[in-house]
Length: 79
Image (cartoon, rainbow, N blue to C red; front, side, top):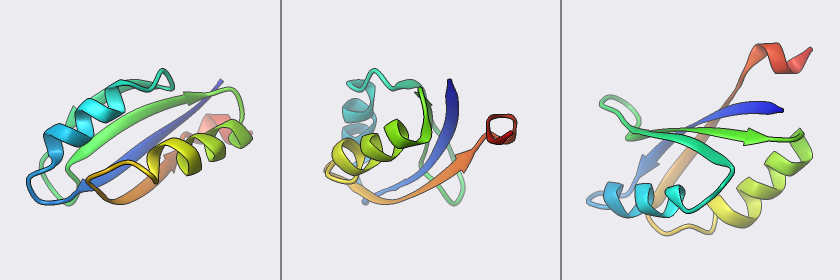
């Protein structure tokens, strides 16, 4: 299992919408609203990086209210 954290910036006033949409995806195991440069941190679990790539392209990038996404790959999974 691969773990990737998504650092997400939401459009102004759309944090709640983004969180609700993210919660619908079984690949996302945790969602946290945070303060700072990003608005949301989400933990994604995927079988492999190909599955993660398809998840991002087909389910996340098309989602309303997301301004930007920065993935953080867990180092232990890269070995």
